[in-house]
Length: 286
Ligand code: AMP
Ligand code: MN
Ligand code: MN
Ligand code: MN
Image 1 (cartoon, rainbow, N blue to C red):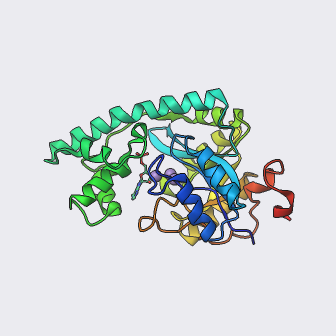
Image 2: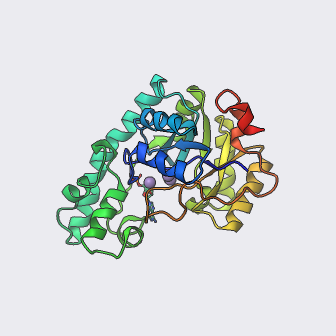
């Protein structure tokens, strides 16, 4: 079995390691095919690719796009994208531009419950300023003692229904798919088990995703229970969608799964990398 990890984050977005450090860790952990999928940015791909080549890791250009769909936030991973495709690069720049105002809104909400200085505090945790996000707020609030760790801060302050949550309009599903597919990449619904979609809403989402040219469901991810992996494997198979896998690693001590530490696919899944003859060395697949 190849060791494949197609979802992780560097300090370009909300990961703790630089792209080169991330690849170094992946190499130490025996990863053979790696995709870097920073939120709404592709600025880390060149550094990661160079580091991966030095370690003989097959590197896949990736991104995780924030999408608003029917009032919810979804994450769509793009794999094997072309970072030079202008509509993708320009579209992501627009998505990033919304993050600064959202950060001000989050800080204003937190101020209402007596938490001062969170905007400046969160910015001390960012790698690239335009990628400011909830994780940076969470790291600041955890360091200030508002909860025992990042996960607890999210639960207490930053998820829907909590005082520091603010609604935000991200990219449309349509746009995200057109940027990914237009660049020659494959679109993957990231961690579908995280959205708490009822049966009918999930069915609508899959209808739309397939009609827009989507390729795969992320079946194996650290956010899924074994039952959810089975569940989404069945949906992928029923829809003729491929299956993807990724740790969603953000950093040592913060992530549930480390790089390359993934359970195998449930039986019957067709892996997304079977499509990449052009990218992945045929010998690696055989
Ligand atoms: P943002 O794009 O700024 O809304 O931040 C989304 C990121 O926050 C996700 O990619 C995760 O890294 C992190 N996140 C979301 N929910 C949680 C949670 N419940 N616990 C820990 N981290 C979370
Ligand atoms: Mn993240
Ligand atoms: Mn995500
Ligand atoms: Mn992610």
